[in-house]
Length: 427
Image 1 (tube, rainbow, N blue to C red):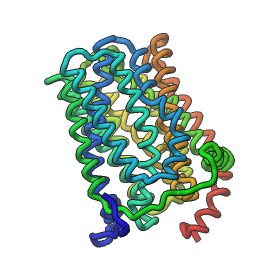
Image 2: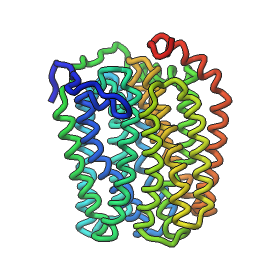
Image 3: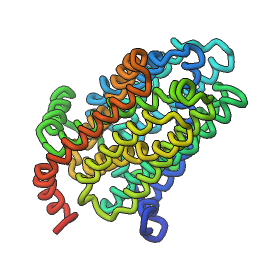
């Protein structure tokens, strides 16, 4: 599985939006993860549809989202310390195998016709625990897969394009499968799809990475990470904005089934169309970032993207037509994706290597860990004032957050400029 020899690019240097694919390990990861993520998005659509079909409750849609992501908020800081200490490649192999078993468990219960909302909640919580370790390990491992650090921003952008390409394809496939044969087959296909990413990880040639030895206790290393994140203004402001848009904006995906049925008077295929439209915008945003040659200027991009996300959500909340919704959702999809990926790129560029796992764990908390709180709030609020008004409120909050971040950009630039000069990014 591993060897002491570092991975060397086997193919000629690439240019343009796909230049990070010249690195063999990254190429393997990209191909395997793309297949697996299609399955993941199929399962996300199927899970939401199953819960809404069983209960008809927008509140429970929020509760399921809460159970699936709250472990990341609780465990990510500790997992970040372990990611800095342990072999990230081996962590990923373990988390992908466990994720595969979780999907097969969902499939087995669904095929047997005995699955309940309680089962879904417990299995979502189990996946959340797995993700608490998988996300910081996966984000930190990108650096080990890409030998040329100048290709790192491109690799992160391609990661985002991979996620969002699957987001375009997966929901459409999921909607068709649900309508044809039911949710169980969605879960089973997802389980099978994990074989691709596990095989890609096993096929990698990974340089031996010595296990980090530290005289400090885990609690002390955790405190070091927290002090860095909270005390360094660029990291703190970027993560706070990401946490805001994740908490207030991202729950619109949890409310999608209710929008598809109650507002747009459609079915599972409508849900697939809506998710695909949002994914198309996200994919376009990812390709925009992949085409960029430098990280310089990403602070302004983050501010604009957060505002665009909010505008897209407000417009979507006002729509009563499936066609119009599919026109405005790409704005929201692109805005969220660019905010998330640009923040990732800036953090990966400026962070100290010894703190990478911990910083990416806080990134996971901001992006994924806060989402369950937003999902729960959205479920409660939507139960009282309706899903469209809830989405509109979230959009307004994102616009305000983006404006506030833009106001602080001069301070942001003053802190990152010396780091960019030191690392040869700017002269």
